[in-house]
Image (cartoon, rainbow, N blue to C red; front, side, top):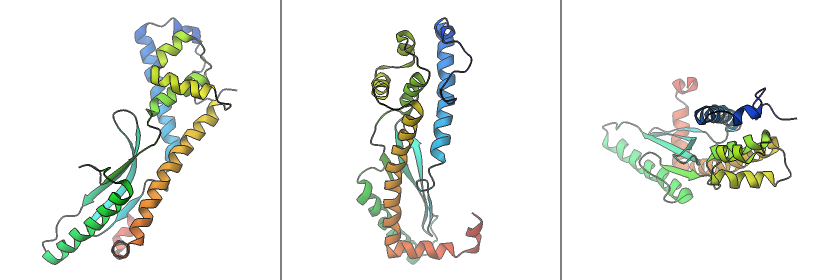
Length: 219
């Protein structure tokens, strides 16, 4: 039995073939949006050890899963420096702590940084996640018609589709494996960063000091 996540419902697939090009594009875009929502909903249920927030007196830091312009998943670390206090000693100490933090990311992620992120990590399977979802859609609906496949899949997606089709797993199992791969890989990086931060005594004490502030209990 097909999973409701993937099937097109009561629509006769012959109707898809008879659609105009614009109608097919609208149909494809509608299902792209539907599958993307399903993807993020499932992934967000598993991100408790990936998307984390750190509070220090010199900055705030958080990790998030984001997508670049090519649809490739990244684990990104967003850094926001606190406003300078005006006290030279405090500001010098904060600058030193920021360098300690930056060195941790350089150690783990090397030169994977830019003006926006203190560090980022690209998912090793450098595939557009939307291509993966489209391939699963074709398999889930058993769309063997070459014309429809050519419309729904570009060359890169066809490679993914063929790989999935030749596996011994159904569409839901493949989807679960894909989510698990993302979670395990990003979780490994997130935990490594977390351990490095709290194994550093200066950063550990700074964070613990800030967490004793009563107002932080309500964040």
